[in-house]
Image 1 (cartoon, rainbow, N blue to C red):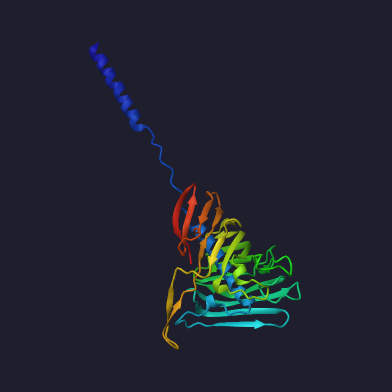
Image 2 (cartoon, one colour):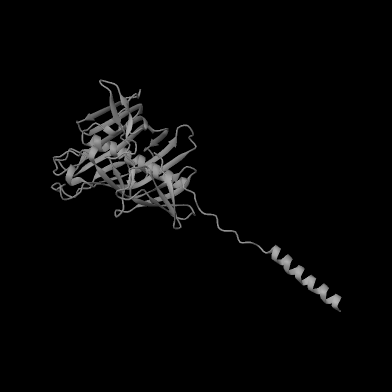
Length: 324
């Protein structure tokens, strides 16, 4: 009987041991760290605000300083202002490395009309500018606005509500809308789309445009962007992107992470400052496919002037560098 009892005990112990060995271990969930699609959607939006910035210079009958040829660039740019009806302004790049460090080719044309007889400039009540891009490329991305959509022509509109609006007390504000298709020149299978409406506010209107007769000095401007856009990132992945007026994306044209772009030797030796001005503040919400929403944070007020920020997914924040 003792032998039988001992053998039974060993059998039970073996059974418990084997059961313990075969017990399934629950693996920890893999963290979602896919950032590329959000970064791509941020990149196309920055490119659209660049186009708006160029048109802002042209609409004030000014030379677009930020996209002037960089020292040593073999490319050129040509600016034409046509004062006949309909009025228009255009800029043409010829494989030009610009002061913001980007290489551009092609042509941007802004044809504008007014709903008020006293309107003449981008800052004026009633300004409407229709944008046409002709073979326009930036750093190897062809940006096309010729796709027909329900949005209509790509345009910039001054949102002043009255001709006698006082800039010193009411900030200047514009809308930018349209459909823009991005195609990688080296690999045309890579495409992206920006479709929507953004709103730009000149945050320091009182300083830069205290009266309707004062041209906006964009070199000193701080501009805020809010609104919504959608489209596709590389890989044909649909997305939406939202920015609230309470925490808009901020571009400060007095700061640049790249202090020196190069040195000019004519007519004398001088340092050329960079005119690259990334988004330095604000937040946005990026949603794509079945993934968790991404909360994009470009920095806080007073943060260093750089092209980095954080992407938060399910409450976990990751430091990222955005595309230039």
